[in-house]
Length: 286
Image (tube, helix red, strand yellow):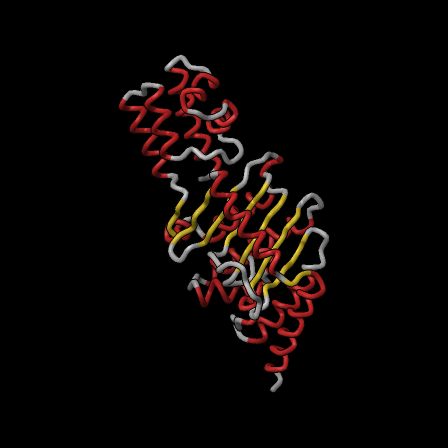
């Protein structure tokens, strides 16, 4: 849900509470949630989730009239946390990149797991162009704008207060997306960025005895705007899923810890990346 949508929903819900003559503390007691959560939902701040269950109970406890119920329900449905790629693409890939940049700037810590591709913040222009033009089929104009937007996002890599911990499977490094030349350049660039003080990189070798299966790739944004709020973004086959429920966030946090503990890190990870990059470079000059 965008911040603008969160704010609009919060304003509608606040109006319902005030019409019922309830304070935030009183409504929180009725709903079984803290006054702090009531305040965050109403102000559209942080990432307090106003899910269907909470909104339904909110409307019931405030005796909202039919008009208010219709408006709030319509707004909630229009701002579903699952968004089809067709809707995201209709706003332009450039705008989609800006939504990621907003999260990245707000987060103090970013945890990434990828078993499909190099994460966006670490992509070269050539790698990004190949993905957007060949894999996604975007027009040349859209590709140019999207590549520029993605490159602009990289400023977060140089923010002293940011910590970015990335875990990749070896398969991500071995996939020759765009061919060996594009991929070799990409791997060398990834290795360079892993030396930044803001970045921690782990690679899970393909022959690792894993204690758990691999799940979907995800980006977990922690301590948003200096608070305890977090959001996870999962890119599915036909849609993007965003989650900010604390219990569900905890599951992604635990899974990332499993992956990190299984990964080669630091110089060991860079040695693996270098070995794969050298093999690809040799393919170019055969």
